[in-house]
Length: 218
Image (tube, rainbow, N blue to C red):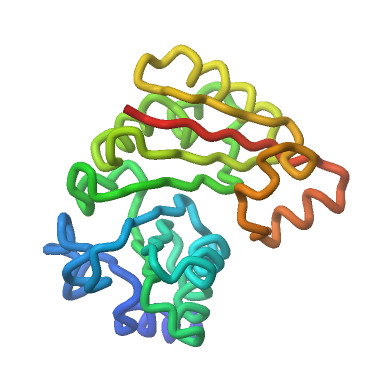
C-alpha cells in the first residue's frame, strides 16, 4: 500500500500525467500544445494505454509529434510516466480519465490520430457499448479528432475484430477502412512502427495472429 501511495504522489507531481486536481486539469482543453507540450505538433492518442508502451515507444521514434496515453488506472500510468521521465520524452504525456470523457479534455480537432492497442474485447453482448469501437465511442472520437484523422486498432481477439469490421462498414462517416487478419504477414506490417507490447508478445507466443485495421473518421 505504501508503494502504491508513493507512486500516486509521483504521478500527481510529475507534470507528465494530467488527472483531476492537478494544475492543468481544468484548463488543458484546447491548450495541450500551448500548456503541456509548448509546440504546434500533431497530437496522437493511445487509448486504454496501460503501461504506455505505444505512447513512449512512438514518443522516442517521432520527436516531432506529441503522444498522449489515456487510461484510468494510475498504477499502470506510473510505468509510462517513469519511462517518459527517465528518457526525457518532452513530447509524451498521459491523461488519467475514462475514455468516454475525452471531450472534457480535448477541443474539436485537437487530436490528429488515435491508436487502440489490445483493448479489453468485452465479449459479453451486454458489454457491447463498452467496446472501444462501438458507436458510443466513435461519437466521442468524432468530437475531438480532426476531420479525416486516422484511427488504428490492433487486437488478438477475433470477436472484437469481426464486430469492429461489421460495425465500421455500416457507418457513413467511416472512410478508407483497411484491414488484415495477420499484421506481420501483410502490407501493413510497418504501420505499427515495430512497437510490441508485453501482452502482444504473450499472444504471439501462444500462436495467436494479430489483427489490424485502420480507417479515417469524418
